[in-house]
Length: 237
Image 1 (cartoon, rainbow, N blue to C red):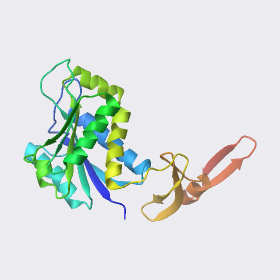
Image 2 (image 1 turned 90 degrees about the vertical axis):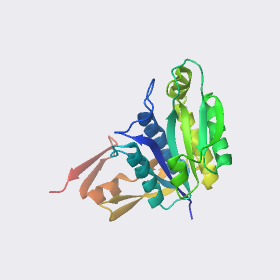
Image 3 (image 1 turned 180 degrees about the vertical axis):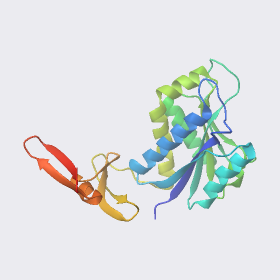
């Protein structure tokens, strides 16, 4: 059985985190979503991600995030954050916080550093942090970079894709996921109203399905013109 994960972004829309050259909440959501996309399209991974849109206090925010994690069936929890200290043009770097997952934290921190050029601050044990202390499964908290370091933010912007890929690679390795080979199809399906389904395949991270299957699923008439290589769909009246 495929091991599952839950990822989340730190803070909430109404209780925002660090902000300077970039905004922690906005960027954490981008990284969380991209790592999740890579794990489920470029690997045979399975899991879910969560963003808090409703909390209005810090305590509520922490409880909301942890409650979501603990309600899911999973083997690993991870959360994306961005650090802050004071405004500087000097490099600060990436670090990964853990309760009892030092080895995984070290690997993630080193992978992000190697991929992006961010300074590797390494793993740091933080047993008092609410997220790490209260999630039921092993958990790590990734501080991608410092929002108030010009160097860090520049490296983050330039290397966003490789940073997300580096995180996904280490998490996939830890969870035992297999990479979907380029050009190799993986089974998928498309559903209409959670009932009718048609087969599909994922190739290079994209879901492919025959147009005729889509037309039939939606109750449309399909007409193909071989000369112009044009497919037309019509409503059936």
